[in-house]
Length: 456
Image 1 (cartoon, rainbow, N blue to C red):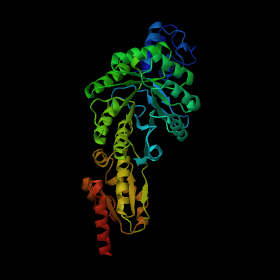
Image 2: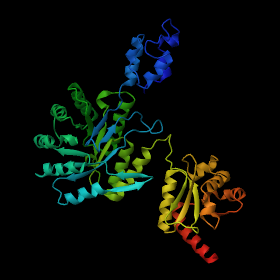
Image 3: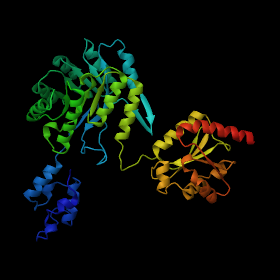
Image 4: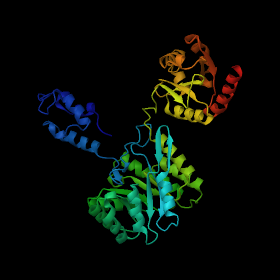
């Protein structure tokens, strides 16, 4: 981990109250100010004339990259993998989301149809468009070059997988600006290093064991080639997770350079793994958590892809920054003075789930979102961020009294205890206890609307 400003300051003259303390020769008024800037990498360590060899050594070790960040894909649509700094998400957020790739063979009879499906696949969840990260194009016939050019034109980041170096380099002569990730099976580190240097593209270094992987990676480093991605081949289901964890721990905790690179894993390399989409999906979810940076799926299955993208989105959110939306009034559909008014918190997942259910009911409604620090309903209620006073203020701020004539407010069923509190704050309003779960909103709204029509 990088040093903090206070940790650096301990080694400077200002901390030791030496004669040269706060000399200002570094351009800053105090040693503490310099230490804070150095911790943020905003100034070179050489700026201070009084840096000791001990601090230089400690600083260099602390600043060493734990896991290299490897970009690939064209400049307009790049993918970045690696650059992780912690083992667990609760320590600090993960940096670059795992790249979920789909395998496509050049000889596939339905190549164009499958490519279009991959390119056009997109689902929205919690305000984010979830898409396929990249495509792994396998060399299985003479059209490999033609198909590589077609994928390159789509600007979808691509992994080229082949056993033929000459064929691959011929393709790179024409599409190197699209910067694909190169995986040439059964090739030596020296051959791959030459390709990396000539075309400035990342390459995959493979091994069937940790020892082989370390030896091959060390050869790349000796050749001054560090634009590499690691790959474990022919792994049993048990050894794969153990080895992936060992690689990540070696990089993060021990800063072991030969293993300080992101990892690509093909599901086809997992021994005894069936082609059943569900089993493939289960194992991909395991690899998302432990600790693949790229996962190449054998098949494109929309249901499996959606579940994996959802899992990835949850894992790669910042645990210190809850997903939240702007607190305001959201008209859902063509609202009017008779539309129901529903209130909830500004937790993004709550918002998008509730909106989806309101839309499914085909009943235009006003959704009043309270400022709740991105907390879910029960969490906000227990933290006193979703109470009668806040809800009443929200209704008044949004001017709902002028927008609807019925003066009825629907609250989540789990916080039914707020009914009297809200009605005390809003004496002209009637509080209706709504559904406990979002899945019940459709039935609730339809029943509610039917009852309102009967009362007219």
